[in-house]
Length: 261
Ligand SMILES: Cc1ccn(O)c(=O)c1
Ligand SMILES: [Zn+2]
Image (cartoon, rainbow, N blue to C red; front, side, top):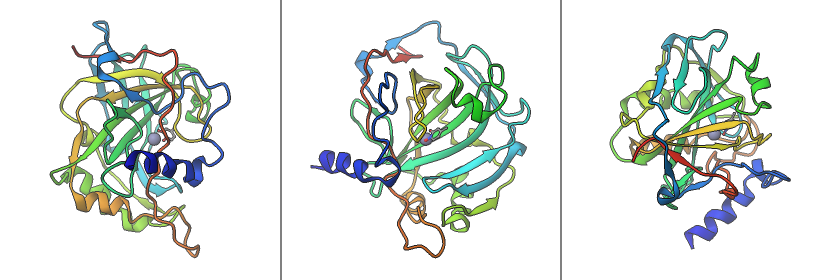
């Protein structure tokens, strides 16, 4: 029952009413990662993450999530290694979550859904001159996905949660300086990686996904703060910002690689 309402719920989501499928898409995201079908790739290197907390600019409500933007005018907050040929610059991170703890993540692992999922979005400054251009480039983007599970209070996340009331409405923005997204990364280095797409329009197939195997823990109050945000602007009839995830997409002719045995 939850599953069907889960899928029905997605279909009604305003953002994807028109964009549920991309015509001719062969590498769409998100997907259900079947652990037993993923292939260990010994050539995958450890992911190297060097974020500079002073590149953090502000938090804003873009109408489908809350997003923390970074100064990407230089190679200051970058990732490299893993499946990547070169370094990628951090542009922003945001989350996807459900109305209740039973669903919310975009990716699944063996059909297990998490209450929320963090996406750290990076672009390739070697093949593109801007993030906007990289969106349209094959392998222009790398998104690190981190699952959130209900558990202990997350002290690092709380600094961001405390800023959410200031960005309750669509297009609200608040200054947010010196934040190190590394605090949101699980310590376990294991990840899956596959070729996919954006999960919001324009849904372009330009993303190398790196999905961390181990979730981070957040507490009930922190998840409930996410759910107090609004899709709607000030003055409009309020619509709670929940269920801002895209439905699962077919794996088609893709193999998910794992960095671990
Ligand atoms: C660039 C981009 C835009 C939206 N979402 O959800 C992503 O994960 C990445
Ligand atoms: Zn996302």
